[in-house]
Image (tube, rainbow, N blue to C red; front, side, top):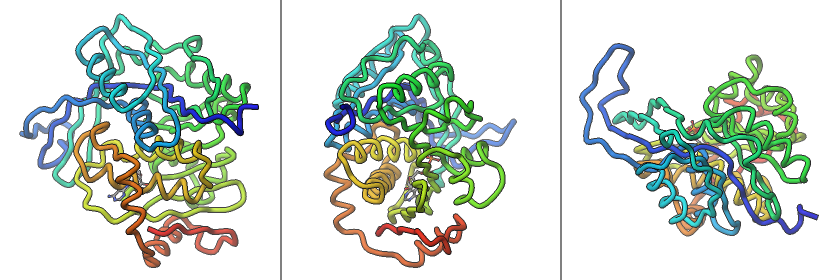
Length: 324
Ligand code: ADP
């Protein structure tokens, strides 16, 4: 039996060198903005989530990743191994993936990805799933590979988390193999157009679905009840990788055996801390820092009420609201 003893998180996904520049605002089409110095740092949704799962502690983290034979690939390998992520590397003839990121002084970001090596991940690359509790997937690698990995995991009794980012429609056969879907508000809108956020989460048809709502917090549908977790109050300065930190920390917390409300609370605290530092993998907090934030957090009834209203679930009979 896999379920009771499995203790690993496996992320199969993208790794990118993030080329980051801060600017007064995100340029509009046709506009040129003079920014600050260029920073080249390790990123990519898959790699960020793997680092987040490793730093969250209590679960071993591994990643299936495709890298080019170049300096960016070396940087990413160093970052992942440094965080304690065990690697299954597919070596590609293409350049390692890159993301061109502008971060505004308001903490917003705009990103263009050149996927490169990430496009070389194929269905046959999935490693052995022994001891894997959760397989974590995103949409920055070929969709055929994502679908094949999800089906293989389902067949092996491994739970599948799909972060539907970047936003795009998801084939029905992939959705059918997903245990937990994570979307932000824009990504959810691409999957289900009409209804309240709560109704749209339930309409996805996955056993569990979570929408992250930035500084508002998040809302989960568990098949019978809604779990709301307001965001932790922090001074956000760079929201890059907030969603990735949320996903990786959530997978680790669930693998540790935490119930859904506690796992959402842990993931939200980790994601909040990620917004207080610049960069992607460099901004992902350790378990010690997350536990320290959880220890001092209190209850904010007005934030919880606003979140329930925003999601249209305030009057649902089965509603759990987490402390912040
Ligand atoms: P994405 O980065 O994928 O768009 P969100 O912006 O929804 O994802 O952020 C993911 C999670 O990170 C949120 O659910 C929340 O818990 C946390 N978060 C994001 N922005 C903030 C913020 N300004 N303050 C506190 N927590 C935040």
